[in-house]
Image (cartoon, rainbow, N blue to C red; front, side, top):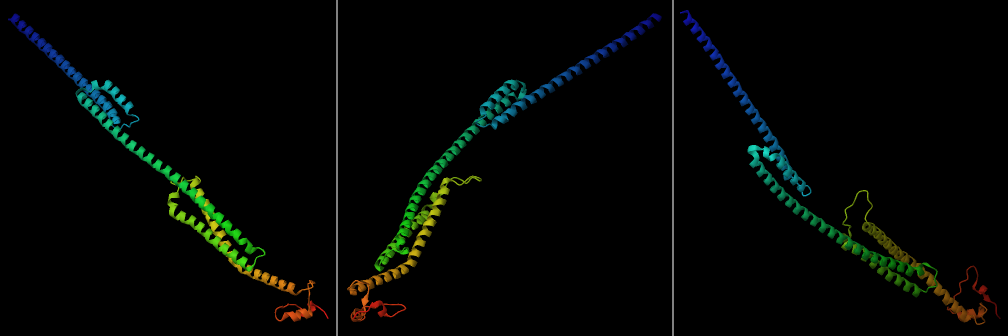
Length: 317
Protein backbone atom coordinates (compact mmCIF):
# COMPACT_ATOMS: atom_id res chain seq x y z
CA UNK A 1 0.00 0.00 0.00
CA UNK A 2 2.80 2.24 0.97
CA UNK A 3 4.56 1.56 -2.26
CA UNK A 4 1.48 2.39 -4.16
CA UNK A 5 1.18 5.75 -2.45
CA UNK A 6 4.77 6.58 -3.17
CA UNK A 7 4.21 5.72 -6.80
CA UNK A 8 1.23 7.98 -7.04
CA UNK A 9 3.11 10.69 -5.26
CA UNK A 10 5.99 10.43 -7.72
CA UNK A 11 3.56 10.39 -10.60
CA UNK A 12 1.91 13.54 -9.38
CA UNK A 13 5.28 15.25 -9.00
CA UNK A 14 6.21 14.24 -12.55
CA UNK A 15 2.92 15.56 -13.84
CA UNK A 16 3.51 18.85 -12.10
CA UNK A 17 7.01 19.10 -13.50
CA UNK A 18 5.77 18.17 -16.92
CA UNK A 19 3.04 20.75 -16.70
CA UNK A 20 5.51 23.35 -15.56
CA UNK A 21 7.88 22.48 -18.42
CA UNK A 22 5.03 22.61 -20.90
CA UNK A 23 3.95 25.97 -19.53
CA UNK A 24 7.52 27.21 -19.70
CA UNK A 25 7.80 25.94 -23.26
CA UNK A 26 4.55 27.61 -24.19
CA UNK A 27 5.68 30.85 -22.55
CA UNK A 28 8.99 30.75 -24.36
CA UNK A 29 7.22 30.04 -27.61
CA UNK A 30 4.81 32.89 -26.96
CA UNK A 31 7.71 35.21 -26.16
CA UNK A 32 9.50 34.19 -29.34
CA UNK A 33 6.30 34.76 -31.26
CA UNK A 34 5.82 38.19 -29.74
CA UNK A 35 9.48 39.04 -30.38
CA UNK A 36 9.18 37.90 -33.96
CA UNK A 37 6.01 39.92 -34.46
CA UNK A 38 7.66 42.96 -32.94
CA UNK A 39 10.65 42.53 -35.23
CA UNK A 40 8.43 42.21 -38.23
CA UNK A 41 6.43 45.25 -37.15
CA UNK A 42 9.61 47.26 -36.65
CA UNK A 43 10.91 46.10 -40.00
CA UNK A 44 7.63 47.07 -41.64
CA UNK A 45 7.70 50.46 -39.98
CA UNK A 46 11.32 50.98 -41.03
CA UNK A 47 10.44 49.94 -44.55
CA UNK A 48 7.48 52.32 -44.60
CA UNK A 49 9.65 55.12 -43.23
CA UNK A 50 12.24 54.48 -45.91
CA UNK A 51 9.57 54.47 -48.59
CA UNK A 52 8.21 57.79 -47.35
CA UNK A 53 11.68 59.29 -47.20
CA UNK A 54 12.55 58.11 -50.73
CA UNK A 55 9.14 59.16 -52.06
CA UNK A 56 9.52 62.62 -50.52
CA UNK A 57 13.04 63.01 -51.92
CA UNK A 58 11.86 62.11 -55.41
CA UNK A 59 8.78 64.36 -55.26
CA UNK A 60 10.87 67.27 -54.05
CA UNK A 61 13.05 67.05 -57.17
CA UNK A 62 9.99 66.51 -59.41
CA UNK A 63 8.53 69.77 -58.08
CA UNK A 64 11.76 71.60 -58.88
CA UNK A 65 11.71 70.12 -62.40
CA UNK A 66 8.13 71.33 -62.95
CA UNK A 67 9.26 74.90 -62.13
CA UNK A 68 12.40 74.69 -64.27
CA UNK A 69 13.51 77.50 -66.57
CA UNK A 70 15.41 77.08 -69.83
CA UNK A 71 18.62 78.03 -68.02
CA UNK A 72 18.47 75.23 -65.39
CA UNK A 73 16.32 72.52 -67.00
CA UNK A 74 19.25 70.29 -67.98
CA UNK A 75 20.75 70.45 -64.49
CA UNK A 76 17.40 69.64 -62.84
CA UNK A 77 16.76 66.79 -65.25
CA UNK A 78 20.11 65.31 -64.30
CA UNK A 79 19.30 65.76 -60.60
CA UNK A 80 16.02 63.89 -61.12
CA UNK A 81 17.79 61.02 -62.85
CA UNK A 82 20.24 60.78 -59.96
CA UNK A 83 17.55 60.79 -57.24
CA UNK A 84 15.57 58.14 -59.11
CA UNK A 85 18.64 55.94 -59.36
CA UNK A 86 19.29 56.30 -55.63
CA UNK A 87 15.76 56.28 -54.17
CA UNK A 88 13.31 54.63 -56.56
CA UNK A 89 14.11 51.07 -55.41
CA UNK A 90 13.27 52.11 -51.83
CA UNK A 91 9.79 53.40 -52.66
CA UNK A 92 8.22 49.93 -52.43
CA UNK A 93 4.56 50.01 -53.40
CA UNK A 94 5.01 53.64 -54.58
CA UNK A 95 7.63 52.73 -57.16
CA UNK A 96 5.34 52.66 -60.19
CA UNK A 97 3.58 55.81 -59.08
CA UNK A 98 6.90 57.61 -58.55
CA UNK A 99 8.07 56.65 -62.02
CA UNK A 100 4.82 57.96 -63.54
CA UNK A 101 5.02 61.23 -61.58
CA UNK A 102 8.63 61.64 -62.68
CA UNK A 103 7.77 61.13 -66.36
CA UNK A 104 4.80 63.50 -66.10
CA UNK A 105 6.92 66.12 -64.34
CA UNK A 106 9.49 66.02 -67.14
CA UNK A 107 6.73 66.28 -69.73
CA UNK A 108 5.21 69.30 -67.98
CA UNK A 109 8.64 70.88 -67.63
CA UNK A 110 9.40 70.49 -71.34
CA UNK A 111 6.02 72.00 -72.25
CA UNK A 112 6.66 74.90 -69.86
CA UNK A 113 10.17 75.43 -71.25
CA UNK A 114 8.76 75.54 -74.76
CA UNK A 115 6.15 78.14 -73.74
CA UNK A 116 8.80 80.21 -72.00
CA UNK A 117 11.07 80.00 -75.04
CA UNK A 118 8.25 81.06 -77.37
CA UNK A 119 7.28 83.94 -75.06
CA UNK A 120 10.90 85.05 -74.77
CA UNK A 121 11.34 84.89 -78.50
CA UNK A 122 8.26 87.03 -79.04
CA UNK A 123 9.40 89.47 -76.37
CA UNK A 124 12.85 89.71 -77.95
CA UNK A 125 11.31 90.21 -81.38
CA UNK A 126 9.12 92.94 -79.89
CA UNK A 127 12.14 94.61 -78.29
CA UNK A 128 14.11 94.34 -81.54
CA UNK A 129 11.21 95.89 -83.44
CA UNK A 130 10.87 98.68 -80.89
CA UNK A 131 14.61 99.31 -81.04
CA UNK A 132 14.48 99.37 -84.84
CA UNK A 133 11.58 101.83 -84.80
CA UNK A 134 13.37 103.90 -82.15
CA UNK A 135 16.50 104.13 -84.30
CA UNK A 136 14.43 105.00 -87.35
CA UNK A 137 12.63 107.69 -85.34
CA UNK A 138 15.96 109.05 -84.10
CA UNK A 139 17.41 109.18 -87.60
CA UNK A 140 14.23 110.77 -88.92
CA UNK A 141 14.26 113.31 -86.08
CA UNK A 142 17.92 114.15 -86.78
CA UNK A 143 17.12 114.63 -90.47
CA UNK A 144 14.23 116.97 -89.63
CA UNK A 145 16.41 118.89 -87.16
CA UNK A 146 18.97 119.37 -89.95
CA UNK A 147 16.22 120.61 -92.27
CA UNK A 148 15.04 123.03 -89.58
CA UNK A 149 18.63 124.16 -89.05
CA UNK A 150 18.86 125.01 -92.75
CA UNK A 151 15.60 126.95 -92.56
CA UNK A 152 16.84 128.85 -89.50
CA UNK A 153 20.11 129.63 -91.26
CA UNK A 154 18.13 131.08 -94.18
CA UNK A 155 15.98 133.08 -91.75
CA UNK A 156 19.11 134.46 -90.09
CA UNK A 157 20.49 135.42 -93.49
CA UNK A 158 17.18 137.14 -94.29
CA UNK A 159 17.30 139.07 -91.01
CA UNK A 160 20.88 140.11 -91.75
CA UNK A 161 19.94 141.31 -95.24
CA UNK A 162 17.05 143.26 -93.73
CA UNK A 163 19.38 145.03 -91.30
CA UNK A 164 21.78 145.83 -94.15
CA UNK A 165 18.93 147.24 -96.22
CA UNK A 166 17.94 149.54 -93.36
CA UNK A 167 21.44 150.91 -92.69
CA UNK A 168 21.18 153.86 -95.16
CA UNK A 169 18.06 155.15 -93.38
CA UNK A 170 19.85 155.22 -90.05
CA UNK A 171 23.09 156.79 -91.35
CA UNK A 172 23.86 160.25 -92.71
CA UNK A 173 24.14 158.98 -96.25
CA UNK A 174 23.58 161.55 -98.98
CA UNK A 175 20.15 160.29 -100.08
CA UNK A 176 17.51 162.08 -102.03
CA UNK A 177 13.83 161.73 -101.22
CA UNK A 178 13.51 159.24 -104.06
CA UNK A 179 16.49 157.34 -102.70
CA UNK A 180 14.90 157.20 -99.26
CA UNK A 181 11.63 155.91 -100.69
CA UNK A 182 13.51 153.33 -102.74
CA UNK A 183 15.51 152.17 -99.68
CA UNK A 184 12.33 152.07 -97.57
CA UNK A 185 10.61 149.94 -100.16
CA UNK A 186 13.64 147.66 -100.20
CA UNK A 187 13.45 147.38 -96.42
CA UNK A 188 9.75 146.52 -96.56
CA UNK A 189 10.41 143.89 -99.21
CA UNK A 190 13.33 142.46 -97.23
CA UNK A 191 11.08 142.51 -94.14
CA UNK A 192 8.44 140.46 -95.94
CA UNK A 193 11.09 137.98 -97.01
CA UNK A 194 12.55 137.79 -93.49
CA UNK A 195 9.12 137.26 -91.96
CA UNK A 196 8.32 134.59 -94.54
CA UNK A 197 11.53 132.73 -93.76
CA UNK A 198 10.91 132.96 -90.02
CA UNK A 199 7.33 131.78 -90.52
CA UNK A 200 8.66 128.85 -92.54
CA UNK A 201 10.63 127.84 -89.44
CA UNK A 202 7.65 128.08 -87.10
CA UNK A 203 5.36 126.32 -89.58
CA UNK A 204 7.90 123.53 -89.90
CA UNK A 205 7.94 123.11 -86.12
CA UNK A 206 4.13 123.06 -85.92
CA UNK A 207 3.83 120.52 -88.71
CA UNK A 208 6.82 118.30 -87.98
CA UNK A 209 7.35 118.96 -84.28
CA UNK A 210 6.02 115.59 -83.07
CA UNK A 211 8.36 113.82 -85.48
CA UNK A 212 11.36 115.70 -84.07
CA UNK A 213 10.77 114.55 -80.51
CA UNK A 214 13.50 112.34 -79.12
CA UNK A 215 12.05 108.79 -78.74
CA UNK A 216 14.54 107.98 -75.98
CA UNK A 217 13.06 108.15 -72.46
CA UNK A 218 14.30 110.83 -70.09
CA UNK A 219 16.82 109.43 -67.61
CA UNK A 220 16.78 111.26 -64.25
CA UNK A 221 20.12 112.89 -63.53
CA UNK A 222 21.27 112.67 -67.15
CA UNK A 223 21.62 115.68 -69.49
CA UNK A 224 19.05 116.11 -72.29
CA UNK A 225 19.72 114.25 -75.51
CA UNK A 226 21.52 115.93 -78.40
CA UNK A 227 18.24 116.20 -80.34
CA UNK A 228 16.55 118.08 -77.48
CA UNK A 229 19.54 120.37 -77.04
CA UNK A 230 19.65 121.08 -80.78
CA UNK A 231 15.93 121.91 -80.85
CA UNK A 232 16.33 124.24 -77.88
CA UNK A 233 19.17 126.08 -79.62
CA UNK A 234 17.16 126.33 -82.84
CA UNK A 235 14.16 127.78 -81.01
CA UNK A 236 16.42 130.42 -79.47
CA UNK A 237 17.80 131.29 -82.90
CA UNK A 238 14.28 131.53 -84.36
CA UNK A 239 13.21 133.88 -81.56
CA UNK A 240 16.33 135.96 -82.12
CA UNK A 241 15.60 136.14 -85.86
CA UNK A 242 12.07 137.30 -85.12
CA UNK A 243 13.27 139.99 -82.72
CA UNK A 244 15.97 141.13 -85.14
CA UNK A 245 13.61 141.35 -88.13
CA UNK A 246 10.78 143.07 -86.27
CA UNK A 247 13.21 145.45 -84.62
CA UNK A 248 14.78 146.36 -87.95
CA UNK A 249 11.38 146.94 -89.57
CA UNK A 250 10.14 149.08 -86.68
CA UNK A 251 13.35 151.12 -86.61
CA UNK A 252 13.37 151.58 -90.40
CA UNK A 253 9.78 152.84 -90.40
CA UNK A 254 10.54 155.21 -87.57
CA UNK A 255 13.69 156.59 -89.24
CA UNK A 256 12.12 156.82 -92.69
CA UNK A 257 10.29 160.07 -91.94
CA UNK A 258 13.42 161.60 -90.49
CA UNK A 259 15.39 160.50 -93.51
CA UNK A 260 12.73 161.95 -95.84
CA UNK A 261 12.84 165.30 -94.06
CA UNK A 262 16.62 165.27 -94.10
CA UNK A 263 16.67 164.41 -97.81
CA UNK A 264 14.05 167.05 -98.61
CA UNK A 265 16.08 169.69 -96.80
CA UNK A 266 19.17 168.55 -98.61
CA UNK A 267 17.37 168.72 -101.97
CA UNK A 268 16.06 172.22 -101.16
CA UNK A 269 19.54 173.34 -100.22
CA UNK A 270 20.91 172.03 -103.48
CA UNK A 271 18.16 173.83 -105.36
CA UNK A 272 19.00 177.09 -103.61
CA UNK A 273 22.68 176.63 -104.28
CA UNK A 274 21.96 176.03 -107.93
CA UNK A 275 19.88 179.21 -108.12
CA UNK A 276 22.55 181.20 -106.33
CA UNK A 277 25.19 179.98 -108.74
CA UNK A 278 22.92 180.91 -111.62
CA UNK A 279 22.76 184.56 -110.56
CA UNK A 280 26.25 184.89 -109.16
CA UNK A 281 27.63 185.99 -112.54
CA UNK A 282 30.92 187.26 -111.21
CA UNK A 283 31.47 184.07 -109.14
CA UNK A 284 32.30 186.04 -106.03
CA UNK A 285 29.80 184.03 -103.94
CA UNK A 286 27.77 187.20 -103.48
CA UNK A 287 24.79 188.78 -105.19
CA UNK A 288 24.70 192.52 -105.92
CA UNK A 289 21.69 194.40 -104.52
CA UNK A 290 20.65 195.63 -107.93
CA UNK A 291 20.92 192.19 -109.57
CA UNK A 292 19.29 190.49 -106.72
CA UNK A 293 16.44 192.93 -106.61
CA UNK A 294 16.13 193.07 -110.38
CA UNK A 295 16.21 189.39 -110.93
CA UNK A 296 14.36 188.30 -107.82
CA UNK A 297 10.70 188.88 -108.64
CA UNK A 298 9.88 186.17 -106.20
CA UNK A 299 12.25 183.69 -107.69
CA UNK A 300 15.11 184.25 -105.29
CA UNK A 301 14.39 184.22 -101.58
CA UNK A 302 17.31 184.74 -99.27
CA UNK A 303 16.79 184.05 -95.62
CA UNK A 304 19.15 186.11 -93.52
CA UNK A 305 18.65 185.52 -89.83
CA UNK A 306 19.51 188.49 -87.63
CA UNK A 307 20.03 190.97 -90.48
CA UNK A 308 18.69 192.66 -93.60
CA UNK A 309 18.88 191.03 -96.99
CA UNK A 310 20.92 193.87 -98.39
CA UNK A 311 23.59 193.21 -95.81
CA UNK A 312 24.43 189.99 -97.67
CA UNK A 313 24.61 191.83 -101.01
CA UNK A 314 27.54 193.73 -102.33
CA UNK A 315 26.99 197.46 -102.87
CA UNK A 316 27.29 198.20 -106.64
CA UNK A 317 26.78 201.57 -108.42
